[in-house]
Image 1 (cartoon, rainbow, N blue to C red):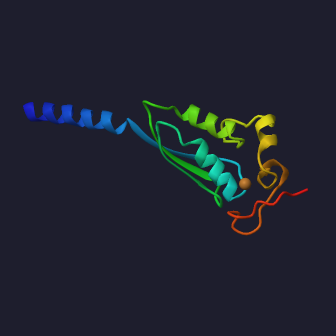
Image 2 (cartoon, rainbow, N blue to C red):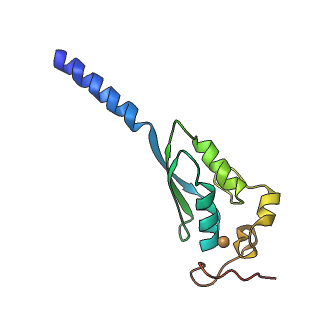
Image 3 (cartoon, rainbow, N blue to C red):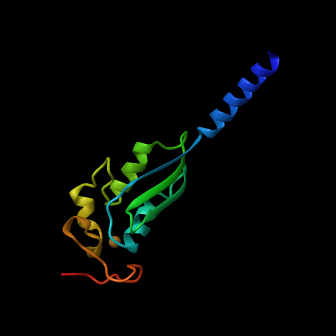
Length: 122
Ligand SMILES: [Cu+2]
């Protein structure tokens, strides 16, 4: 019986430790490698352990410390950088300020891999 109690205690402790870190993934609108830089740079904040946005799938994967930052705040950071998430939309002002080739709402698309393709479109 004592062992069972000890086990329960340890398991609860482990669970509490595990909950300090969380990994989430959600859709973020974007077009190219510049968008990837912009999104990932916006998430270079305390509490975010890892941020990776995939150009092909538009999926943003985040590992973060739940005590330092919330999921909502992460969505907000991305929206503040000019990119719509599946929960928070970027304001028209920030959207207007992103690069012409990144204007995902207007069907913009960068040719090539997008990494070094930063010419303005008309
Ligand atoms: Cu872009």
